[in-house]
Structure formats: C-alpha cells, structure tokens
Length: 128
Image (cartoon, rainbow, N blue to C red):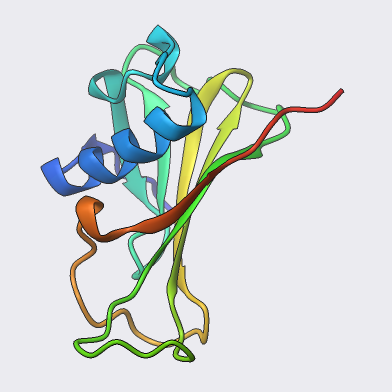
C-alpha cells in the first residue's frame, strides 16, 4: 500500500497539541512541535501515522509507546453507558509517531472530534 503524506489539518493539530501538552506537562520538547510534522491516514476513523518533515523514517525499529490518551463522546445526547471514541498518541525514539482513533464498539464515529470536547486526558510515564 502506498503511503501518502500530507499536512495536518487545523483540527488534527489541535487534538495532538492538547495531548502533547498533557504528556509534556506544559513543557513541550522541540521534537514534539506539531508544526514540524506531516501525517498519513491509517484508517477511516482518523488514525494517523506521524513523522517530522525532515526525517524519512525516524522511528524505524523503535518501540512505540503511548504518551497520552483521551476520550470523546460523539453522540448528540449524553449516554453514560454508550460507546466512546478513544484517542491515543504514541511516540517512538523521542518523536511522535501515531495518533490512534477508534470507537470502543468498533462502530462509525458520528461527529467531528473537537479538541475542546475531549476529556479524561491521561499522560503516561516512561518506566525503565
């Protein structure tokens, strides 16, 4: 399959920036500056491969790990028991490498994900 790299949309940047801010505790490393990244679609949910513009294959062979996750409720009416959209940001070799997006029941995402509407943002510590 051919990978087509493109610029991130403004909405994608806002989502990633929100997750990066939590993962870095507000002290964003230059390597995580989303303005320097390009994206390639992984699936129809909106998941993306990420890579810096100046690197061809930055994390080749490196183990990817989650750095932040969040949820999005894409229903028009609140439903405390309904499926949510899971959003997880990964890094490998110190660089952002993937934004994973999927609905917990495997269904179609119904609404556009807004960065201000994601909740329960969690950061992950790296343990040796």
